[in-house]
Every structure is written in structure tokens, then in C-alpha cells.
Amino acid sequence: QGLAKAVQYRERLQQSRATGRLDCSIMSLWFVPAAVLQMPLLTSVNFTGNALLMLPPAIALLDSLKELGLNDNRLSLLPAALASLTKLKILSAMDNRLQRLAPQLCKLTQLEELNVTNNPLLTLPPQEVVRAGLKPTLAFLQKVAKGISHGQVELAAMRLTSLQLPWHELHSCLQALVLSRNELTSLPHETSSLTALTALWLDNNSLSSFPESMGRLVSLKSLALDNNLLTALPSCICSLSALERLTTDNNSLRFLHPRMSELQSLTLLSAANNRLTMLPSSLALISSLRSIALSGNPLAPLPPSLRERHDIEMDVPRA
Image 1 (cartoon, rainbow, N blue to C red):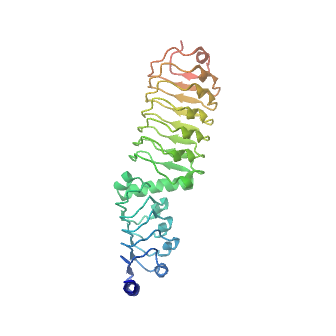
Image 2: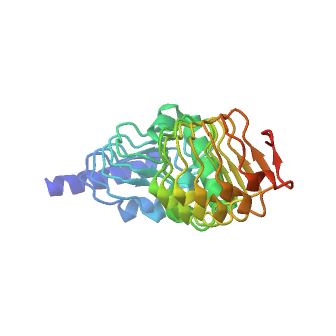
């Protein structure tokens, strides 16, 4: 059987030199043969039904490809090298073990069909984005790629129910992460690895908790948590020493942590339309604080120490 496969493989190689189309399907291949990588004029290659574990960087040499079939293999990644195949129109990788698509694949602007169905482990992009079709998938990858190159990932209003990003590529460069108007119920613990992050917008989601590990985001200056399902702010927020703006409007907060006095860079605190009945007197110890928005709360009279802070603009009556 092995000899027959070898003969068949050689015959297919010979035919492809005339047609530009190479069929390597069901050849028991564990890797892409070197001979294939030396055929830059190929326009179509089919590797369906093999046992490929990875695609080599040299796949980028096949820059005339218009069709690439990778169905029914063992691939866990569609690598960045594929982004060099700028003429590619059809990329199919169904029935693999894909976990992620490299963000750089957004450069495949000629792509007309991307099929990655039946890859249940795929989290980048999220399944809900992939199901939406080619354009949303490429748009998601483009936004993540921009985060790697420019330090900002903007994923607002993409109906995300979960979040997975190339954390190892973003942890030291990402400065702004916008996740507004999605359907997130939690954040992955890897979010706390984004140590360069200065702005994190999580407003208009369905968050009911905030991971304690987020206290590691020591560069964070702006945190938006409006319109979620929060009943309390965790103590880790009090460790965000660089925080300047904290907005938590339209949640169900019942109290603010007394340790918030540790936020000595805070200038704006907005907690309108919650269930706050009192404020900690320690807020008066935040010397940088200039604005507090608290309308729509059943507040008791403000603590005397806060009433004496005439440099703070408040939207609640001073008793």
C-alpha cells in the first residue's frame, strides 16, 4: 500500500506541473512535502483527508494559490504564513482540531470562501463570529491584528458571548480594549495579563462579577462597567493605582468599597442609577477626585467629610 501511495503521489505531482492543480488528498501525509513547497506556480492544492498537524512557514512560497483545501486533518492553527497567499479565494479547513486562526489572515482580501466548520475547539475568532460569515470573521481578525500593531482592539457590538485573544502577543503592547455592547457574562483570567492596558470598556454587557486578578492592571486609567449586572465592585479595583475614570452607572451596586480611598489618581466616579444607600467617608481622602455622579440612588445624606469637599462637583444635594 505504501508503494502504491508513493507511485500515486509522483503521478499527481507530474500532472500538476501541467495543470497547476495538485490533489494530495487521502495520501496519509503527516507533513507538507518539500517538493510541493517548491512549486510556486500551483493555483490549487488539496490536502483533504490526511493527518497534517501543522502548516510550515514555507507554505507562504505558494503565492499563486487560489484554492487551498485542508479538510479532515489534525491542524490546531491556521498560521500567519497563509497571509502571504494574497491571491487565495477559497480556504477550507473543515473537520480539524483548530483552536485559532492567526489574526494576520485578515490580509486575505481576495478571499471569497472560508470554511472552518466542525472545529469545536475554535475560540479565536469565537464561534458566534465564525457563524456570522466571512466578512465578520475577517473584520474580527483585522481588529485583533490592529491591537498587535497599534495597541488598540475595538470589538464593540459583535455579539460576543466569550472572549479569546492572542494574549501572548498582546500582553505587553495592548493599551485599549473596547468590548462595549456585547453579551459577555464573564472575563477570562488572561485579561489580567494585559499589563500595558490603560483603557478597558466593558459597558453594556451582562457581567455579574469582575475577576480579582484584574487588580494586576496597574496601568489602567479608564474603566467602564456601565449597564451590567454588578451588585458589588470587588476589592481588586482598589488596587488600580493609576485609575482616573471609573463609571458603573445602571448596575445594582449596593455599596462602594471603603478601600476606594486608595485610588489616589481618581478624578471621576460615576455610579448613577444603582442601589447605593450611603457612601464611604473615605472617598473624601481621594485628593484628585473632582466629579461624582450619583443620581438615581436612594442615598442617605453625604458624610460630612464629603460635604466639605467643595472642589468636587456632585450631582446629589449637599445636606
